[in-house]
Length: 102
Image (tube, rainbow, N blue to C red; front, side, top):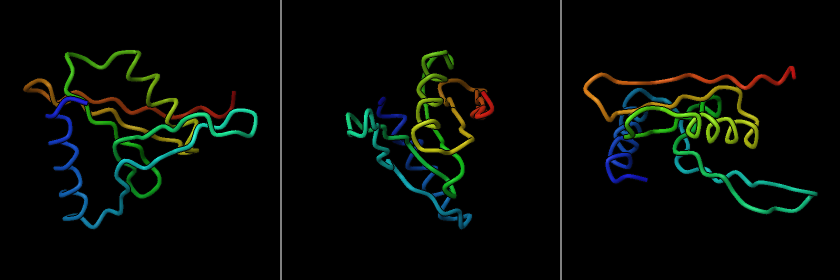
């Protein structure tokens, strides 16, 4: 993670506290395969246990970032995620919803 990403993540925490939004920071989500924990995924923030927020400072949001967020959603059981990119003057963001109907 870029050090600027950490700065924006911390700013989100301040804003969430200011707005009274409950959140978890760096929540560890175990990855289970054949009933064994094989790894853990750690999303940046989870707001109200309903939205994963991934903070980026990259040139653009890519399929790699989308895939990372979708994996976090699958493992955590949360349905909605945001990727927020602060790299440029104009904020770039994407909202992903896990399609569990498939």
